[in-house]
Image (tube, rainbow, N blue to C red; front, side, top):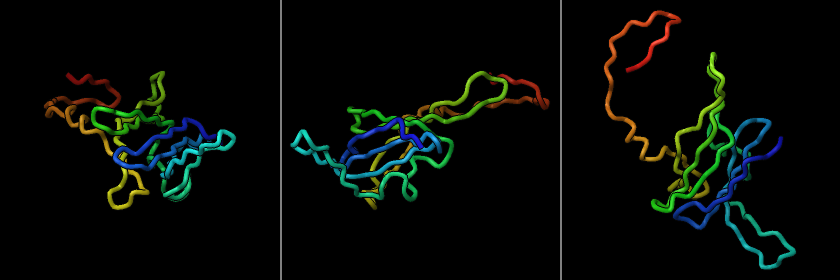
Length: 147
């Protein structure tokens, strides 16, 4: 398959780097962790020395659901790498296909630095501002708008 949406970044709080790529034919995102070694000879490529299994080996998928074409950005205020991906989803009766995932923090597993963890950013909790009671009976096939 074709590799696209590549990403290469330092794991915050470590001297390891992540290489991430999306596989177009399987619509999945894969990662590998390693050391970046700059080669001081312009006729030779820099090196990426693996610390984990190679990309697309084992269980090194970013997500095991419908998740694809992810990209990251660095949040310098909190020194963290934030990942957002595309969730390929089509809702019947609409003209759109897919949504963006909740942002996730990428970090090294404290028990095994060659593994990555992807947890929702803490700011997501601010979206939970209590429940909204709704007393309504909705007939099958009917539309209902939440207040």
